[in-house]
Image (cartoon, rainbow, N blue to C red; front, side, top):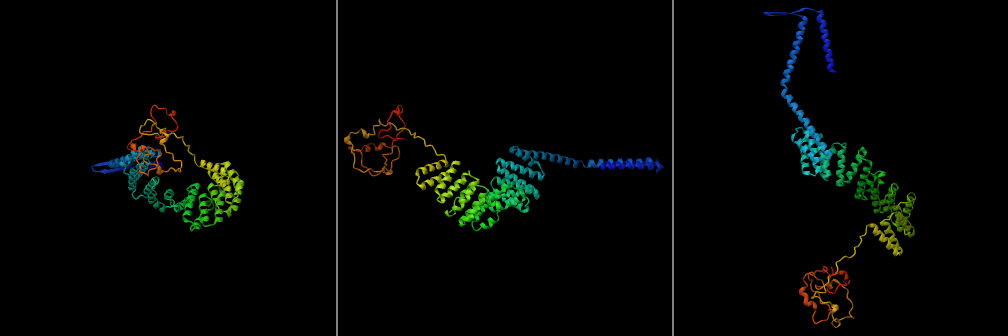
Length: 506
C-alpha cells in the first residue's frame, strides 16, 4: 500500500512540474570562466533530477558493498538457524514416535553445534526424555543438567526444565526429588495446573494424604480434573485421614466432607468403624445406611451385618426394605442371613442363606451354613458345607498315586538273614509283653541303611534268640552304600507286594 502511495505521489509531482515548466519558459545561464553555458529551464531541471538519481544510486551501491561481510554473517547465521530447526524438529518427531535411539543421535548432534540457549534447552529436554525411556538414567541426568544450565535466568525455560525433570523423577518413583522442583512453581502461581497435577502425583507416592486431599479439592474447583478421578482420590485420602485422626479428629474431618463424599464406600467404612469403636452403633448404622442407599456395595453390606444382638431387629428391618427392590442380590441375602444368625433366628437365617447360595456359590455363605448346622447339631450338613467352602476358596490339589520305586530284591545278599526262614526253635515269642508304640527313639543305626550312624540307644529285647546276634557280625559293613534300584532282568510285577525281610523301600 505504501509503495502505491509513493508512486502516485511521484507521478503527481511530475505532472505538476511539467505544467509549471510549460508556463514559465526561460533560460538558465551558467558562467564558469572561461566557460559560459546557457540552458533552457526545462533541461536544467531535468539534469538536476538526473544527477540526484545517479548520486543516490551510487551511494546505495557503496553502502551495499560496505555491508557485505555483515550481510554474509547474517546469511550464515540464518542458514545455521534453519539447520538447527530441522534437527530439533526431527529429534522431537523421533521422540514422539518412540524412536529414542535415533532421537538421541540427532539431538546430540544439535547440542554439539547450536549456540542458541533456547534451542539448547529444548534439545536437552528432548534428549533427556529419550534417555529416560531407554533407561539410561545417567545420560538423562547429564542432559537435564545441561538444559538447566542453558536456561540461565529465563523464567519460562527454567520452569520448563523443572517440570520435565519432575515428571521423569515421578516415573522413576523419586517423589522427594520431584517435590523440590515442583513446590516453587506451585507457590509462584497456583494457576500452573500441570505443576499442581504433578505435585498431587508426588504426594500420592509419598502417601501424604492431607496434601492429596487439598490439591484434589483445588483441582476439582478449577475444573481441571475429572470428577470421577477426583472422587476416587478424595475417597482414598479422606478414608486414610479418618483412620489417622481417629475419634479425636473425626468431627473436623467428617464435617469437611460433602454429602455425596460421605457415601463413598471407603469413607463410610472408616467413619462407621470409628463410631463403633466409640460404642456409637446408632451413628455407625446411619453412616452405613446412607452409603448403602446410594449403592449396594458388598463391603458396606458385610460391615452392616456385623452388629450387637440388640441392633439386629433394626438392621434386619432396614435390610428387608432393600431386599424388596433388590430381591436377587446374593450379597444382600447373605447379609440378612448373617443378621438372623446373630439374632438366633435359625430358620429364617437358613432360608436367606440358601436363597443366596442358589444365586451365587460363595465361600462365606457355605461357611455361615456350616457354622449354623454345627450349632444345630447337623454334623453331616455342616461337613458338606465346610468342604464346599474350602473348595470355593481355592482349587484343591489332586493327590497323586504313590509312584515310589518298588523294593530291591535282596534275597541273594549273604549278609542279611531272613527271620521267617529260621526254625521255630530259634524264635522266642513274647506273648505276654504289652505292645509298645513306635517312636523316633526306636530307630538306631541298624534300622537305617545307607545313612550316617545315629548315637547308640539302649539295647532292646531281641526278637531272635541265637547264640550270637547277627547284627554284631555285619556292623562293619553297614556303612557301605546300598542301592535300592530294581535289579535288571527281574520282573518286578511278578514279585509279592510284601518285600523280603531286610529290604528297603525308596
